[in-house]
Length: 380
Ligand code: NAD
Ligand code: ZN
Image 1 (cartoon, protein in one colour):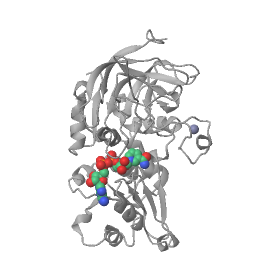
Image 2 (image 1 turned 90 degrees about the horizontal axis):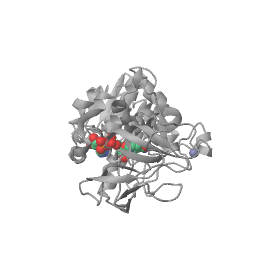
Image 3 (image 1 turned 60 degrees about the vertical axis):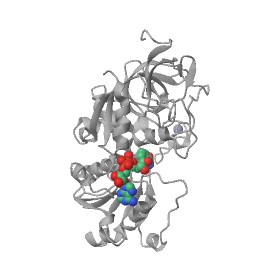
Image 4 (image 1 turned 180 degrees about the horizontal axis):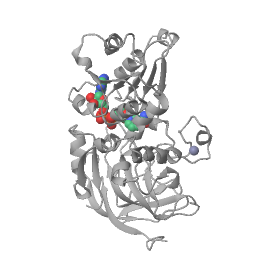
C-alpha cells in the first residue's frame, strides 16, 4: 500500500479551461480510484492529433474545463475495489480504448471494439458514478477519453490499462499508447504484407510512418510513401520508405501512377490521412486478384466512399481498423517486447521534448506541423 492510497492527492495538471486557449498548469485534487479504477502516477506523456482536435473543438460539442492527454507511461499508485490484476508499482500504459475481457467483442479473436470501454470522446466522467475524479478549487474538471494524462496523477478504468515489462523505458514506449500502435497494427495485423511484397502508405505522419515501420518489419521490399507534403519524404526514409509519390506532381489520379510503377498495383496499401480522396486512391491502387487496402484515417462527418463495384469483383479487398486491431491489455505488452528485442524502433518517432511546465510548446509544434511526437516529461 502506498502512503497516499485512499486519500485525495494534490498535484499539478495542465487544465484546458477553454477551446483553443493555452493550457494552464494548476494545482488539482485527484480523488482516489473507485471500483475497478486505478490511480496512476504519470511519468511521461506525449501529444497526439486527437488531443489537439478536441482542444480546438471545431465541429464538436465542446466540453471544458478538461484535462487532455492519452499517450503516456506511468506507474500504478493505488487500485480501487475489485481490481485484481494490477497493484501499486506496476508499470503501465493507459489506453484511450479498453478491454473488459467479458463482452462479446473482447471474447472474439477478431475484434478489439469492447462494448464497455471502447473509445468515447463525449463522456468526460468515470463510468462507475458518472462523476469526475479531478477538481480545481472545488470545481469539477472533465476527463478526456478516460485517460487525462496531462496530470501528474490520473484515475483510469482498470480495463484501459496495459501492464508492461517494468524494464521497458517509459519515455520510449509511452508513444505505443496510441498512434504508433495504430499504424504498426494496421500493417502487421490487418494488411499483413508478405516478405518481398510492395506496400503503399498514404499519409506520412506518425501513424503512416508507424505503418511503414510495420511494412519494414514484415520484410516488404518496396514501401511507397504518398503524401501531399514533399517535406515528409526525408523523414520517411528513416522508416523504410523506399519511394515517394506526391499526387500534386501528376495530372492523373495517383492510383494510376502507382499502378504504372508496380506493374498493375501494390500488394497492400495502408491509408493514414483522413482524406476521403486518399482512401479511394488507396483502395484502387492495390493489385487485382490479391491486393488488400486498409483504412486507418478518420474521415469527415459527411464523407462517403465511392468506387466502382467492379473493383471488388476483380478481387481487391477493402478493410479498416481501429487501434491497429490490438486489444490493449492482451496485446500491448507484446508490442513493448518488440521494442525491447530491437525489432521495433521507437526513438525516431520522438522528434521534440519539453518539460511539463512548457506543455503548450508541444501544441505549437503540432500545429505548425513540426516533427512527429513531442515527449512531455512530468518530472522536469
Ligand atoms: P498527420 O496529420 O500527422 O499525418 C497525415 C498526413 O497525411 C500529412 O502528412 C498530410 O500531408 C497527409 N495527407 C493529407 N491528405 C492527403 C492526401 N489526400 N493524399 C496524401 N497525403 C495526404 O496525422 P497522424 O497523426 O499521422 O494521423 C493520421 C490519421 O490517422 C488521422 O486521420 C487520425 O485521425 C487517424 N487515426 C486513426 C486511428 C484509428 O484507430 N483508426 C487512430 C489514431 C489516428
Ligand atoms: Zn469488452
